Length: 564
Image (cartoon, rainbow, N blue to C red; front, side, top):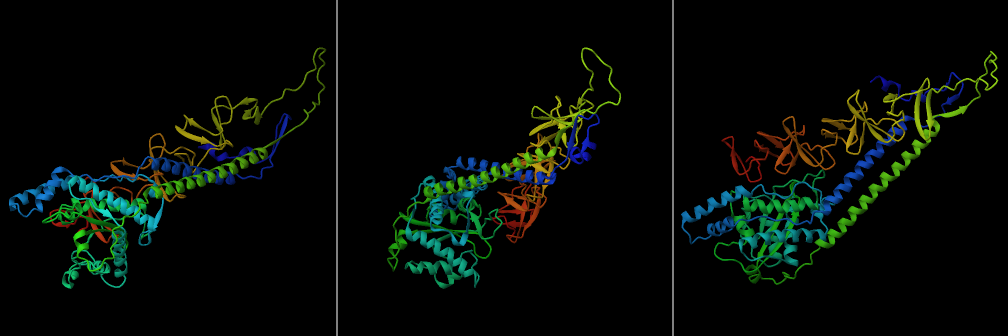
């Protein structure tokens, strides 16, 4: 575009109009780079503010409640499967129903990556505040009792000591991982669990059973990885998703149903009339774990100590939620203030630049060397001819031999159909078949965001194309019409990509059951190695990872999807 090479030519040197009507004197001290740099800061602050404002609005629509479905067929089949009075054929049929129902619900998830009030606050998993521990435990308790109501079994209660028990077990895993293996053939760190049980005088397994990981109280889930940069840290929303996925996985893993039996309260020979529940997360040995503790009243009745408190715990969910929303509003206010201050600075800089841009000094018309002929009615005079930039009624125009330029570029500026210089507006140039945005000082935007749109180095708005933003260190995709893809999946040239809130392309990360490779493309029909989890996973033709099945006729993957 030839006109781009003459950027700011109008103020690069002083010029004297030939016919002597005015003189333009350049006294500019504000550089174009200063304006461009500050403009980019303003656009980035605006995008940050607008994006966060959208997140806050989105968070207010979420009530923080989730449900796990249990069909009547599953509930009855689970009871039949653990009813040893039934024939082998009847129990085998029950197993088939369980497998079928598990396949139906195994990938069920209400967590879609939407921003919630719980997404904002970050916590070190091994050092959670007490009120957060309580809130998470009540979240888990609600899900467990939902399940039990659907199955028709006794609901569980959260008590002071059941919460303490879970917390102590999680700490045993962390402490144990520092000096010995916490893993057994069953996956449980029974040694640490038994140690906690003894503090309350509760029944424990013998030493041989302990070595095999056998114990009486814990259901353990470790197949979860939050999309978080700091290892050992997670948002409250991450931890709630872990709780949910853990319970869902134990119900519907399709491999075994002993965990489902414990979660639902369906027992081998009888149903416990009263159970106390506790939950705690942990991060030992570079893995996120969820500990679900169930302690039956019959175990408490047999305890050799009487220090287990069944007193209920006050639910902190509503209090925490109010405080979290307040923090969100404060953060939003801070971002708005930052944007407003930067915008004010830019406005001041533009005013300064406009005032310095050109100073028009009126001069007297030059006298002709030849005496004009006398006219008795009106003396003759030289006509004033306009050239260059002229400010009229508060707007800038450009004249060429007394003619206004229209529908064209003059350097970095655009003159509209009436000749007025475009300011703070979008214009469409038919010659270049592209949209441009002109700032308040009239210069077109480049290499920067304007709201949801991106202006490239040549000033053209990006449309149906990828752009990489060095400031945000991320790829973005601009759809037809120019707006960036925001918080959604999009199929581009036959390949699926996922974009987070704010438009950032996800790469080298899981999004639910799907994996986005380094290119951002969703993995399909291929193996990927996840160095974080230290394992191979197979992504099927629909992109979801395989689990509890044989892949390619010979590779076994477990319920978490890892090749074993």
